[in-house]
Amino acid sequence: MVLIHVPRPPKGAMDPHRPVNALLQAQMQHLQDAELKLPARLQSNIYINAIKTEGEAGEYIRRVTEAIHHAHDSAAEKRARHARKRTGVIDIAAAAEDRPSRSAGRGKAKKRAKKKSIKAANKKSTRDRKG
Image 1 (tube, rainbow, N blue to C red):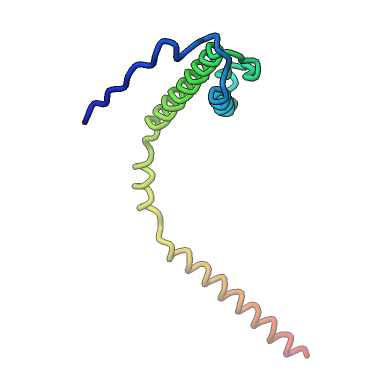
Image 2: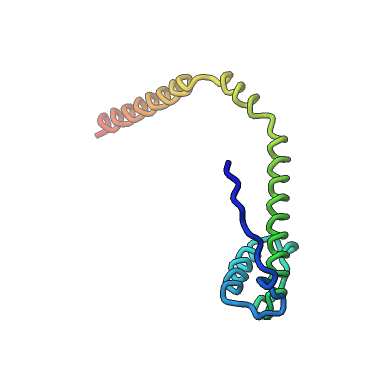
């Protein structure tokens, strides 16, 4: 892989006292939308319209990014715990072979249908005799 050299930004690129620009405001809005989907215990509850400087914006972005990473790590841990608990899948699949075949159940349905048709024929013949 080719190593690409990226020059360091100049020291004046980040001024913590400079007012927030539109790009940072848009980024904070997107992060707030993502933050509201996090569990309440991970939300920062910072009102983004009160953020006026790049330093405050950087602090908010850092806190929300850390919260998102923490939520992701917690969810991955939880998924890993549930994956370890699943051990009965093979047993269930093997037990499926012991089930009776479906054709045994169909015989009962045929018998019921036959009884029903015999009853209907008997009723019809008794009505015909009476009438």
